[in-house]
Image 1: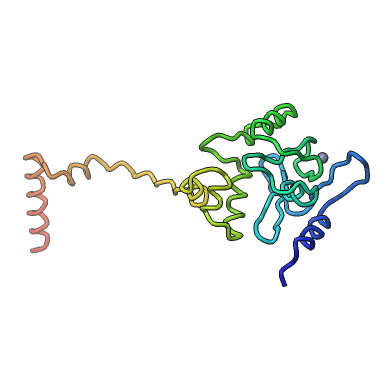
Image 2: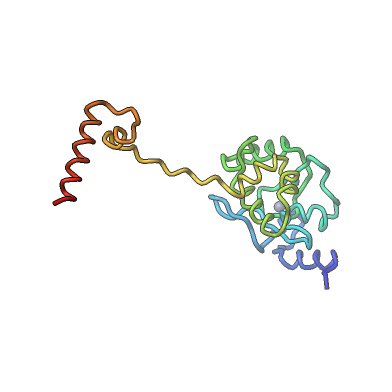
Length: 196
Ligand SMILES: [Zn+2]
């Protein structure tokens, strides 16, 4: 039987490490994504999709409901695993927030064409969990073809070895007189060998 949203919420809470204290962070301690600097934010299966733990918390545990379109769930503390100190902000606020906390490192930078390692992982995970490319494109606000490229990176073409000058000459249709004579000679020699 499918779990109810209340059961998913209870399950979510069971994955948190909560130290008592008015201002202490609530840490999501189950499956967290990693980047080059170590684990970052967690991912949670909400019964329909894989969603970042802090977003799930913002919507369900903290009870703010769906994050308005175009807004991100940002941390007001400096802990990506925290699912308590959250606010909905614009991308600008999110990055301004990160700059202030010295977290706007290269890996986090968003550009139009590039995805962060976390985003790529998220895309792969979401796709693996059944989310369509179309839905991913909507979610990440990129073209479906871009999502497709993240999922199936173009294999690098192996470099063709440079053909030797001899081979080039042999393959060339416009052979010089000397080359034609050379070919003739070779053919004759081959013929003599066959006879012998
Ligand atoms: Zn916190």
